[in-house]
Length: 418
Ligand SMILES: Cc1ncc(COP(=O)(O)O)c(C=O)c1O
Image (tube, rainbow, N blue to C red; front, top):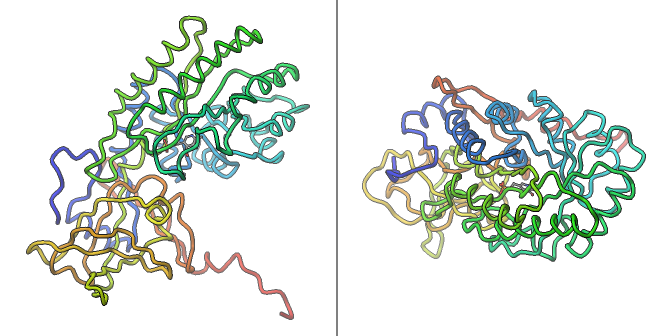
């Protein structure tokens, strides 16, 4: 097993555990550690004086949703599907927030019917889709505060050029329209971006919202009761990443809000972390199937998963740390770990592997608890992996079954006579 740094904050399986889980459940396999997850959720709830809404898009398995809710988080659902998962996990509708860009009439009506606690409104069309509905819940307007989060462009959302939310130029009109229609507007929301290793963008986003709230009080007499600053705190994908501690991050964002509000308003505060609650609690285990040397001399280590269970390396050039479980322990060499798909899915380029890495060895990829199982696909008709929960008792239980061939084939229909 490759040694892991002493100050490791990520969950890491021991050598024996990896081997026994792979033997019992097969690979590729997602593993989530319950204790680690509970600790992260609990730290957020303690550190943030307000609502901590777990962004369920990060990991929407019922077991994760139930666990974070039990630790005091509400649940942010970015679609009707995510909302249905939260409800099935036993999260009361009132503790769910319905989010998402371009919510359809049907999605909004479903949220209202089940009684979600809040809806985050993304555009003027959504405002109009709420007109005439009974029991509309508390509403937040999602604003794009126009800050550059300095993260990967595909996870930047708060800049001025974005499809998400109301531009700051349109925001006063959105407030006015809600008031004119008598809709239950309570405040504002923003999410500037994800995997933020520097809190500056988040702080600027929070300040922009707070200043806007003060301006709306002065200009339109509307007093915001709630401000949600979104998610985004980064995690340790590799040991070079230095994310802020949860407590420091919450303190810095809160201080910025208080300062910008300048005692003129005293709303409640919300936050929406996903990745920073669950990413470090999860690992993925793969089996090596092939080791080959390309014409250039590059060594490819092929594993039994890839793009369909972790699209992040291809989508975001994401990097990860690996822990090898190999029969060979004499030194390391540089290899590229590739996936099984008919794409150039170099999962992890130029990483160190044991010199004698061979078919049958196992490799554990750290920090895969977020945006892996929830972003998995069936590309190349691969069934999606199982997720195992490592209970605090040490027992390993399946919380998401490995997809079967039958399940994979059941959606398709051959019309008669074709
Ligand atoms: C609106 C919103 N809230 C919260 C999150 C969660 O972000 P993260 O997982 O980086 O904390 C996202 C991520 O895309 C988002 O779009």
